[in-house]
Length: 386
Image (cartoon, rainbow, N blue to C red; front, side):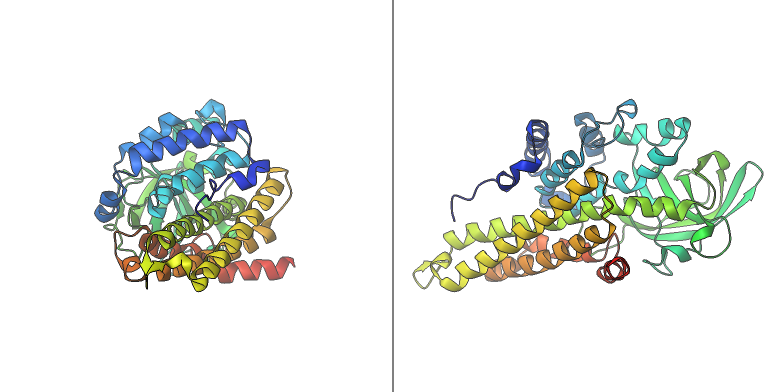
């Protein structure tokens, strides 16, 4: 048990030389720039804005994006490597905050004009601007087709009214990829607009206080009679719902990676603690009940990680995995729920203290089966596609 290999070595057939180099540079970045500060940033409820710039200069922000926009193109496993190593920061909030561009800019890159890409994607990839995605509204989260924020066209601009909530990076975002209603009811009347945060009438709540993900700023955003230029429309009018759906597959994959790494790190912490901590004259790992619990945790983590990688490989090969990624997200979250719970249990009272890594993992984990489509929504998708 003590000679546990690095978590990736068992999965070498998915990763090659290029992945290993990227992994090494992200690992160094996390160890040098993040880990010494992460506890302070968590308690403060934010990380320094210049971390975006540092990550941008290293090329982390641009992983998987076109070279002409300053990105680093690569396969899906390049993105996975970056996600896994950033999770080694032990802070889901930090990863969610730095990563908010991955839900905000793909529609711009896929459907935007050259001018839009240069203006709204390039600077974000460079770490000079912070991008957020605005879909969820106070009236309902998962019901994307029913959004109420309106954008009424008036010559060369739209008048936008409404509000968004639970927006990751919402307090600090310079731009919001925002779902608005430009047409009739339902999915067919939704468009995507890029709204800049310095537009008159745009305001945000103070940072919302959350169970976990403390290091990420989350806000409610108020859009009060904003004047947004028509040239900020992404793609075609009333096609926004479909653009949003296009990105769910990759968002859910990223959440699988977060859940798997949350579980993986909790398992590693528990294994280490079980060999160090003594009870009744012998280490915890000397008790069969602990060994078996760890064996069960390890099995679950391994299965979940392998399933996620397999699906990622299929997505990379262009195979539709909407059903499978929904299964993987639910499975990864169930595993992470159980493994973080058991890790805290193995730590006992120490696992309930804020300076224990497993305590943070346990709290951060809770959002994963809610964000990016709830467990229940995933089950609906799975049932439809079975």
